[in-house]
Image 1 (cartoon, rainbow, N blue to C red):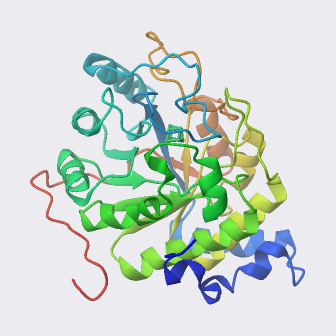
Image 2 (image 1 turned 90 degrees about the vertical axis):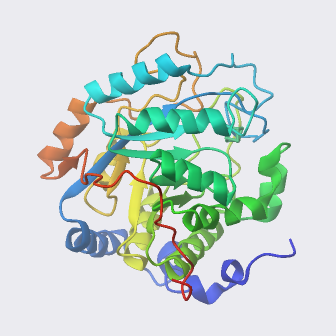
Length: 359
Ligand code: SF4
């Protein structure tokens, strides 16, 4: 594909972790784990911050081949109305959750920007930290979300291989690879404080995706040095359409990749969701990962059980409740953190993050 930014294709930008990922120089996994664990302890202490996703709607105009909410799936479509959003958030709050990730599909009249901003308003009145994982937006839309209380945007590139990306995104606005790639920067320019990026592992050749993902986070760290950055490591899970992953990502490779990212980016938050098994999550907690989802529901209305959609976006693998998962963390001498900051200013958003050299 023409027009790829230089930072994405510059192999020097990821040359340090390539041998760690490919094990070319015989780096034992145990050695990486030990190095990664020491760095994590130094930078983050023995803590894991916890959040939960809230699916606001399963309407979507895109045709991602790997997703249970793609517009050709027969899933019954619905969105949460105002009282339902409040009820879901109250149910989550009763579980101890204080950090929510709001999700929707690509824009539809039923679930567009105004609906999303309204839901951010409701969530910000109840939760300390409100992030959004939805469709790419303009700078002015992100600024409006920041004003409503949104502090973080999660946007995965899914795969950094443009040809594979084209084949997997069969229709809809998500077909625009470069627009998606530029989205985190628009959010940062609008004053959103935290950006989460990632690749959906299994869609494309995993080493190539890992290297490009590292170049992406390094580009953001260099250009927007005030931003809070996180990297997630979602692996493909079964979904209603029965999509078969083109590449199998083993536990060994995923662990190697997570350790390599910690070693390469000591200050970046590394995130692991309930897509992964309890055994894998328990093993990775404290070694590199510093943020995890907990007690997740991927259905619309899954927390209060009032008219929940029957099928989720994907099947979660770790379905333990808050108490069970926190007990495991405590047994490992890790403190579960539900809230680590208090907003003290709720006026207009003036915290725009300029690219390096302009602030
Ligand atoms: S991944 Fe997102 S944009 Fe793609 S079909 Fe699913 S909900 Fe829609």
